[in-house]
Image 1 (cartoon, one colour):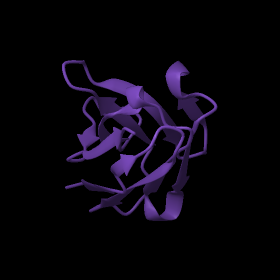
Image 2 (cartoon, one colour):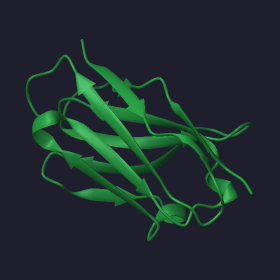
Image 3 (cartoon, rainbow, N blue to C red):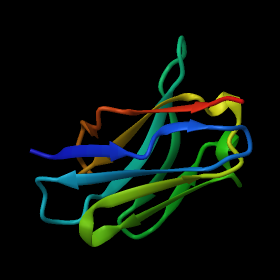
Length: 118
């Protein structure tokens, strides 16, 4: 069973930075795709960024140029460096993993709160 554990959320001021981490356990090969999603109050969960086992990345338009996703493939750990944070970035951030390319379901972490406020 794959378990995802997030850390690094918290409070930041507008223009500030935070770094999120997500470590996967219970698996002994490289996860196909790992990523981050977020859900703000009253809104649907949305994609933030993903990264494949080969390092290919994809970003949602609102975070391009501000957020950077990276991973340690051997450790199945993914990071999200968030710079120039805005109040609209306030949300619960969830780690996600598609373990194998043909998996129909993905794994989710419990989520970590990010609040951007002066």
